Image (cartoon, rainbow, N blue to C red):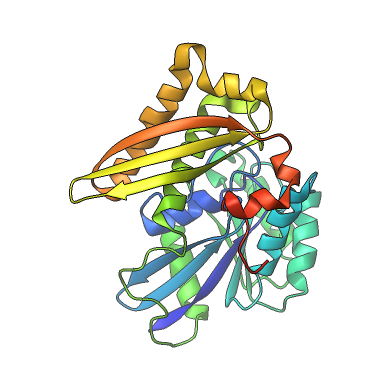
Length: 296
């Protein structure tokens, strides 16, 4: 049996979380068009008859503007250590830019097999230009594989899995077949709410929002969940609540749909909004809000 760890790295919004969800065939990591959506390192465990692959989804590497941004970069870099393969995702529709060059330079230092994944090929109309770009990228590093993919369309994802298996060592399963991820159900529920906030507020509420579960109670048929939405300015709180609470209600409705699909049970969801000024620069909030491990 082939088993091992595979890390997904790249700039924000290149499709790492979308690829993870596509591989697993389920929604585990939230996605949005907002840069910095992924903040925590999420492991998604893929099982089939002849392999177990632990995919490590990392925050997008970017130029940080606060302590939260620095923490996210640290998480991303740390999780290229000790893995068997690095999947380096590039948004090929936008091209290979300076941010990608910076990440590649750091990856080269690790001496780990690197697959270059050219994501969003469904958005590339000129296939000849794509081939030219691939030939150019071959010169930048001795990539183990260069694979054009579309994570959102599931294009070449099975090919990617086959290539990964060829590089992994023979080993017993690392986790049981029932294990899905390293993060708690409470964390996933809070992330579902945060995704809907980003989805419905667009550019109005960027990195300034986070969510965590204050209460989680479950019986055989129903789950009761209370989620606190945290922002750093009072005007953002008003935006999220909306006129007569309309936007907050829609956030709850959409998040509850994802929760029920994930849990397979009816969910009663309550959401609240709270302002904590400058929480992104206050390390004491990172652990409380689930953004920092105890041993960091």
